[in-house]
Image (cartoon, rainbow, N blue to C red; front, side):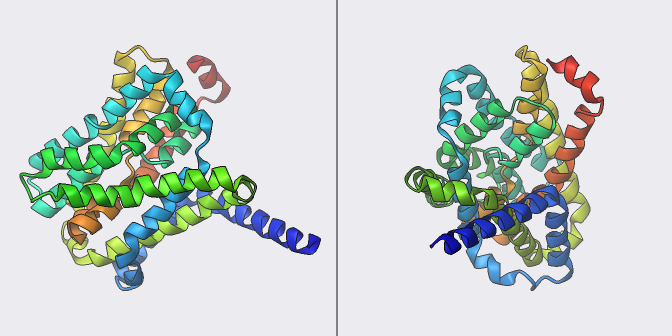
Length: 326
């Protein structure tokens, strides 16, 4: 029995180590998967029908990592969290609509951009906020709150803003969001609550699972749309980069306008500017068509480049810089 327990512990330690490597090279691995999908489109084809399930696995992992403190944080700081969530669900969707109109995007791409803007913040924002020496507790609380209400907010906003380009199946989008987001998160919470010892032992492996899963999803979506991406690469990348950078800027501006301290401004900027792009891609695949998933796939690659660059720029002054934000 003891030997078996030792083997389990060794396996957990090994997976934790691999998770650390995967987290460190997340952007590179996503870029690699996207490149493979573009050059060899059939590589990840087997994953295409299972993208909603794969994203559900990631959201299950998110649920397992949530602690009671995150929910207390929402209750303890209702105004700050509500402000961040409101910015999340207004700034990015309206930017998406305006950019889609300005670039005169094809209907399926425009829908994908709006759907991306209507999604909640992603868990990558919490990591970037930490690196940027922002208010991590606020970032996690905003991500949690925006994710939990996303089955209602995402379909509603998509209907209001994307209906001009394509019919929006609100009921189907709502059900997909429940299946991909809320139900897996709640199951993850329940698993951590009722199997806490086992969950704590293996929770360190979740980053490895998340990184591998999102890389496969991105590779599959890029592969399915390789020809379209090649023909309109400059426009798609310009749209995604502009959306992300303006979101970061306006999120920081919202925090400044409300008189927030510097760490909170950084959390606001990152939380607003970094979307759950994997969710956007999965919802697009489930309710629209593969082309609508392109903006989410490209955003997944880009924001894992822009986020670390911004975080490093903010913290480039070392200890002197830290003293400025306290």
